[in-house]
Each structure stands twice: as C-alpha cells, then as structure tokens.
Image 1 (tube, protein in one colour):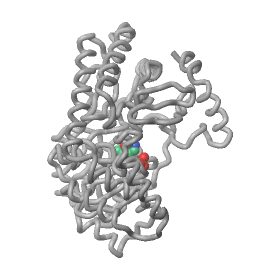
Image 2 (tube, helix red, strand yellow):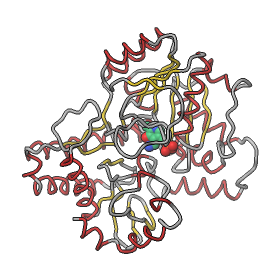
Image 3 (cartoon, rainbow, N blue to C red):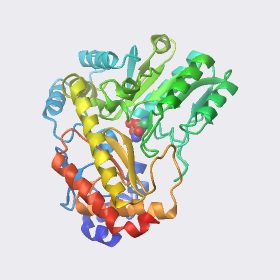
Image 4 (cartoon, rainbow, N blue to C red):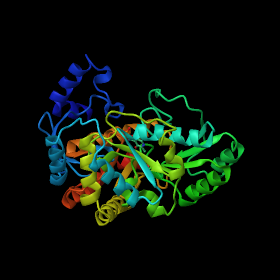
Length: 418
Ligand code: PMP
C-alpha cells in the first residue's frame, strides 16, 4: 500500500524533500507530518481536492472541521473580495466585527460577551487566563486525550508537545467520580475545568451527558469556572454542542469554520468574567479583528450556516456514521466509527469507546492502511482516520465512501476479527 502511495505521488515526494531543507519535517503543522510524506494539495473546489500530481479526491478531511463551507462558497468569496477592496489593514474597529460578535452572542446563550483571536489555541489561552484572574486561583483541570491547541495538548503519544507552564491537574475523561474528586480536593486552588464536549483529536469520543452535568455541578460548588472547548464541536447546532446537551458553561472557546475558513478563534461567556478585558486584563493582537475573518464570519453565520443548515449537517453526519457502523457490524469486524454529527473517527476495536487509549501496533498498522486505502480510492481524510463533512459534499460520494469502507474491512477481515 505504501509503495502504491509513493508511486502515485511523485511530486508530493519531491516537494517534501525540498521543503525539508528550509522547514524541519518539511512543514509547519505537526498534524500534516506523516510517513512516508504528506500529500501536497494544489487546489479545491466545492468538496473536491486535487493534489500537485493531479490526483482527485473527495474532501472528507474538511480541514479538520475548519472547511465546513467547502472550497468555493460564493457568498464567502464575495464577502472576502468586498473586504479586500475596502482596505486590508485599517488599524481600527469596524462594523463587521460588531455584527459577527452579535451573531455569536445571539446563538450561544452562555456567551454574553465575546472576543476574537487568530486561532482556537489563543482562544483557550485567553479563556484560561481569564479564569485564573477572575478566581484568583491557578490550577486547571484538563483531561488526557484533550486537545486545546498547539501548546495545550494532553495526548499521551507522539512527540513531546510544547506546552504552556500552567499548573494542570488531570482526571480521566468520562470518569465522573475521579473528576469530581479532583475538583473537590483542589477547591481552594482550582480556577477552571477545561473540557471538549467531544474529544476531537483524541478520537471523536463523545462526552457522556452525566459526566458533563457533574462537571457543571462540581465547578459551581467549588467556585471554579467550567470552560467548554467548542472549537471543533460548535458545528453540532447553531448554538454548539452545549445547546444540544442543554448545559451552559461559564466560558466557551470557538474556532475552525466560523469565519468562513479564514483564520479564527473566539472566547466568551459570562459578562462578569469577560468584563475583565475592560481595563483590567489586556488582550492585544494585530490580526484579532482582521477584516477578512470578520467579513467572512458575518456572512458565514448570518447567511449560510443557519440553524436549519446546522441541523441538516448534523443529521447527515449521524446517518453516515450509522450507515458505516451498520455495514461493519454486519461484516462482524472489530472496526467502528465514533463521533457526533458530522465528525467521526475510525477505531479498530469494538464499540463503545469512552476514553482515549493507546493503540496497539496492529491498530496503528490498520490506521495507516485505512488512510492509504482511502487515498488510493479517492477519499482524502485525516491521517488518523477522522472525517469532517463539509456542506457541499455530495450524498453520492458519501454512499461510495460507505462502500469503500466496507470493502476495506472485508478485505482485512482476517486481521480485524482477531
Ligand atoms: N481546541 C480544539 C478542540 C481543537 O480541535 C483545536 C484544533 N484542532 C484547537 C483547540 C486549536 O485550534 P487552532 O488550531 O485554531 O489553534
């Protein structure tokens, strides 16, 4: 499978070796660093991608959820073009910034006030800082497998991460007893609990509602803040996964698709916490309110990703995951997809997965084989086996994807059954 991959991507291979002479590993995004070399893309249109060797793919990676609108949404392009004609770097506030913020606060009842950043990572750093200043405490509870940004990751495997020097406590995801015990034991020092309502890069593992409710309750009692990292999950309804679950965190962080595919992050929540930024806490950043992100975001939320569209995408994703899992169950193989709505990850073991795990060597091999097989069949997804649907993706392509997954599983049945 690897040699077929190498044979089909000679230009990507060449670019990788050239890029390594000026960038360590040949790139600047660790998620795109994999063996034997990453595919270099040339262009995208709708939900189709073409690499620099001319191979065509159905884009199921969806830029790790940031590509929700696909590659050629005309209303986003028009908004960006319009913004460009009015000047890029105005060193000023503007109407689009206000209107985009207004849309976010209207959709997320827990977000009374909001601020923009350039990335989800920054949004989380700012939310954690706000929580620490607001409570006058320093500790943060996070969960292994959680990913909150380039410097805020709690993944057990892989190269050592660069992490921020905040004091973190850890408890197991979906383990209510251990989390509430840590919260209670540290009630004098705990500033915040930060949690993804579905572990995204940790394997698309949904939080159990009882777990999140217990975190809500325990943080309130301990006087600590509950932060939902909805960078990946905010697409699950017009008001995020929190709206679907009926739980209001104190602070929420956002990112990915929300500025129409332009660089974006935001954090917000309780007015008494967020008003720290009115004079007490500084949050600077040249590109926080860059006109492209603000203009695209206003259109993305105001006109395109409406409540109805969000619901449709969620349902499409649920149907796809059900279809995949039905086929895999019928085959009797130890493989399934976990996730919520339009985002899911393949696992090479039986359902249900409640917390992150270290894959066995065989699972690692299957992960690579699955990726190579899908790429070979014309489906581009994240190397770890995650897909994130975009709005323009065609149902006929999703039907073919289900067939391709079934074909993969049945040809590897011997390994998958053991
Ligand atoms: N939080 C979560 C849950 C994420 O999935 C990500 C990005 N994968 C981030 C934070 C960081 O966002 P960014 O890459 O924009 O810094």
